[in-house]
Length: 243
Image (cartoon, rainbow, N blue to C red):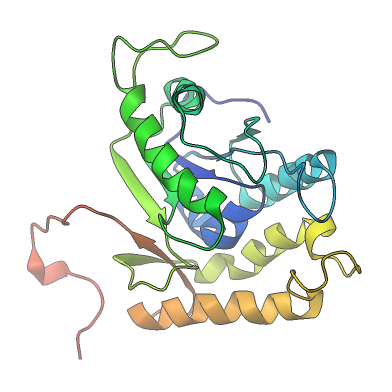
């Protein structure tokens, strides 16, 4: 996909289809508010049980159109072996300087898959490095840039979220973005013990979103963690009823 001059929000994930599962609804909700959104996948899917890297690229581009993102690209980090190295931090910082997002969404920093929790740390440190004026990043040179806010998508983490985003109008579209990955979620024998059966994807996707929606009094939602304390100017307009 062609690159915009600047993004408002960039979701960074280890694998193609991670964003669709954890914050795809939020990207659509923010697009509907007029913000420019994008996705950076760190790997290309060459080590996946199902499909090829070429399959995943085609599917990721189809999903991006469903999610209404302005830009999507993938780096060349090894699938299954994402490492927090200086070389990788600089690769990621180069993208951050080029796209200049104000908000970055990362995976939660704990989880089953090493690529996911490594991406959280790698992404955070790349955001820091990107703002260092004397650090030179690979490729075309762009001025230093440091995102204002870093959020962590926590849908698969057993933690209470800092906040949730109402994705009710986009719940069906979010599911369709995930189902765009036919190589991963279509019915097939390879990896049948590892993947959710196609007939259960809708139920699981909507059940999880419903759970987080109930926490905030909406139908469907996606959860996030932020490490900073929120600042409130007017306690009379705090959302979500207490009793």
